[in-house]
Image (cartoon, rainbow, N blue to C red; front, side, top):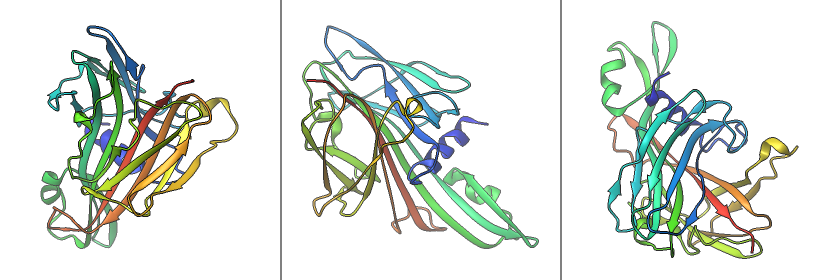
Amino acid sequence: MTRFLLSALAVAVIGTTGFAHKVWLRPSQTQLSGAEPWVTVDAAVSNDLFYFNHFPLGLDGLVITAPDGNQVEGENQSVGKYRSVFDVPLHQQGTYRIAIVNGGVFASYEQGGQRRRFRGSIESLEKEIPADATNLRVTERLGRIETFVTNGAPTDEALKPTGKGVELVPVSHPNDLYVGEESTFRLLVNGKPAKGLEIELIRGGTRYRDAQDEVHLTTDANGEFSVTWSEPGMYWLETSTEDKETSVPQATSRYLSYAATFEVLPQ
């Protein structure tokens, strides 16, 4: 399976509440200090959170924003059987936003009495849908998978929203999360606060307990939600929504998804 298809699969599985597979980025740690520390980031689609047992996550859409707002490259990129991996040297002081951003389309159509499906890039849509296709239905997709890492004191420059799709902006900083404290985040859709987004939040280590122990939250009129952390560890957050603000002429709807990994530390 190609990297693109794996990325598309990742977009597909986000937002399917209750779906067994989850897509994630997991940094080796999120808060560091020093002249030039490094982090290693795993990227995968798995049944159990942060455990490699299904597919690697494609790195074609990797976007790393440094504390000064400029983009930097992930080093030592590799795609293996069950996970992808890359390193990020933290040359600057402050917070890095590490994301995989995927766009594309899903389509269904009929040809010769048979129902068929297409998944691919926007550019390949017209080339691969046959001319005699009927009942064509196209959905544009935009997904963001991300995590955050800070060298020294947390900063906000890298966390500025792009205005595209679902994005999280900090009310509480994502690298300042501690057990027993309440954290608040705001979710935007196309740069505007999104009311009524349904969120699923799960602590990692699901392989070693009988229940997912997921928490369900909903954004308020300001696009905000709050959570009080009960245990330390890596947490996975997911949400999704749909609208009709498509950029693909053939598409009649757009599916937007978002997933993020946070680390909560003990007091």
